[in-house]
Length: 169
Image 1 (cartoon, rainbow, N blue to C red):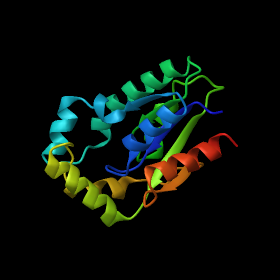
Image 2: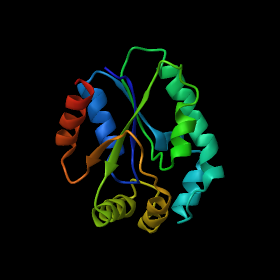
Image 3: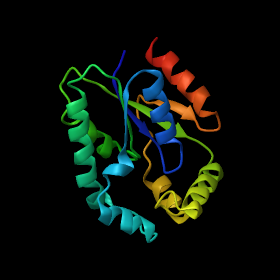
């Protein structure tokens, strides 16, 4: 079974929920990429300003270090990370041993469903990203080659079942 996974997608697509659920079901570890953003990035996003490649670089490198450390373990690892561009995914996998594959679980779905989720989280004060930034994320999103595409209109339990059946096949 594969063991390193990026749970990717735009904000509020369900990355953290699915990543934690999969880690629980597969006795793995979960890491939320948002926890690794520097305060400057969080502040910028909370002000309604989109991150650029320079803002993301250091954050991606920290996550790449984390993945390289996790590659040394036999434990399945799930990292929630937007990973919107192919070059971001390249940074994330750059430090992995040549025999280690970084698997991409892509949460994709209806723009209005995502916008409503972002709005609910933001207004409840549980996340720093406002709904106005969704369009900027969708503009830079590059379809990941070879990813397992998951439709977020399904429940997290259903998505987890789909992923487990695919990775154990």
